[in-house]
Amino acid sequence: MAAKVFTMPRLGQTMEEGSVVEWLVEEGGEITEGEAMVTIQSDKANLEVEAEQDGYLAKILVTEDDGDVEVGTPIAIITDEEGEDFDEDELLAEFE
Amino acid sequence: MDNKLKLDLLRTMLEIRKAELQLAILYKHGEVPCAAHLYEGEEAIAAGVCANLNDKDCITSTHRGHGHCIAKGMDVKKMIAEVCARKTGCCSGKGGTMHMFAPEKGVMGTIGIVGGGMPIATGIGLALKMQKTDNVAVSFFGEGASNNGTFHESLNLASLWKLPVIYVCENNGFATSVSAARSTSVKDISIRALGYNMPGVTVDGNKVDEVYAAAKEAVERARAGEGPTLIECKTYRLRGHFEGDDCLYRTKEETEIAKQLRNPETYWKNCLIIEGVLTEEEYQQMEAEVDAKIAEAVEFALNSPKPEGEDAMTLYHTPLF
Image 1 (cartoon, rainbow over the protein chains, first blue to last red):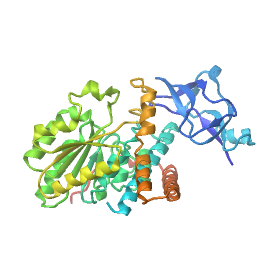
Image 2: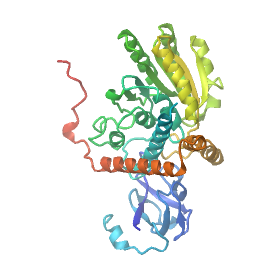
Image 3: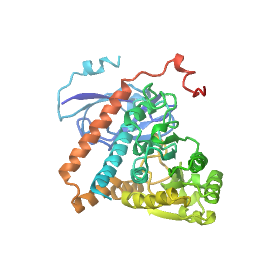
Image 4: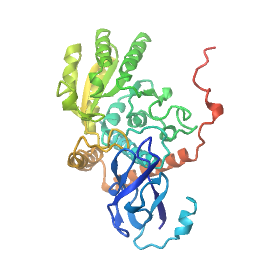
């Protein structure tokens, strides 16, 4: 069991920031490695970004209302198990 | 093919696939400072061809070269470290994905210039012949590169001089974003061999046994001094041209069909299970071992230092005296 932070991905060599266009999985929903989880707008295109592991989209931190955030900014928390407890402050501390 | 070779081919393909999927993640995390062109879906070609080669045989590879490096025996730790620009990489982290070399394994470069590897392989073939070895050179390139002038120059000279070179065209359907139908005057690249008076053959590049058999014949011909061969391997590029490519030039359905029906690992795994060479449990075991090996390589790369300013002028030249 573990929780992980999912950050704004870098989707091109010139991409410095990006925005969430749409979460393709609901908060709390199951995700599958290699399957599209979120649509991100980079500096060049809208791209579907795949989940990097099997698990659950435990919490969405950045939505379509938030506009551009820098690459590397936490945008969600992923857990291995459904409904798993996690310490958000502790997880996000290293990104402060 | 003996059973060991059959299983080795599967393991090599799995290593390539798993390494590429990890590199896709590392790219998104900002660990890859250069463009990344991944080989997912084309693994059977590198695996099937390189299984016929020894360390003294040489290859030239392309911008999509990670698979060739792994299949030719480059340490996967050094490869991933190089792609992530770490000092422990095969070129000390200063070459990156499109300048990877391992001369001790015969990897003579993942050449970023499209079509750039063919003349180099031809020159290596000439050197191997002049040195009177029975070693061979292999050049991997795409169908787009087969429209370049270097293709004509290389195949002409290699045939004229009977050089021990195998030209392996990986026809993955797309030159960057341009489909082969829109860029290439022939349906089968192999037919171009006729113009150079050498054998040309087209195989299903997603079936490792077909690739292996065609490469075996070509390598034997080359070792016997009978000259070059052109092999076209038809395949499909499952990912975009580069990571972050939105692939607007093709449909998602087309890619999904290729993913489901033309997966080279699934094909070969099923062949081996039907033959009784492999069980599902043994496959799971192999996959777990490969996962562990790639995870270890990723950890090695991420824990390795990046080159510093003081490294900027080192290692570019080999001292002659």
